[in-house]
Image 1: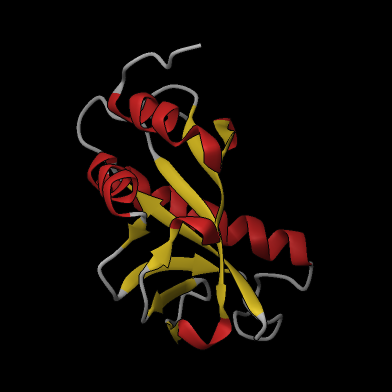
Image 2: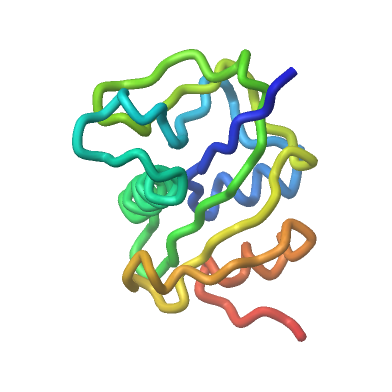
Length: 143
């Protein structure tokens, strides 16, 4: 089955649930993904441009979820195309009809500083989930 890269906005509570249950959910799970070139006029035909648009939209949604003093969190995940069941008119928003299991997550992207710019999101490996949770909450990660 083909896989689709999705970007999931996460807050500290969703990260805690991911640590406890091994899943982002419950379904439906809101996220963003790159779209076909013709799906959104003006978005462009470049794959990287569309990926960046989806990633940025997830970061914007994550900012709305973040509590005061928390950093934004976005998970990049590869999910079965069959679970991506709805795309809205903005060209990136999707709804997944399944939870996203931890093994499907490729990486996390966390604000360098709370309230930072999208370009300042730092990359973390999925194995660094505990550090990601501490960062989102505003605690310093262990080294």
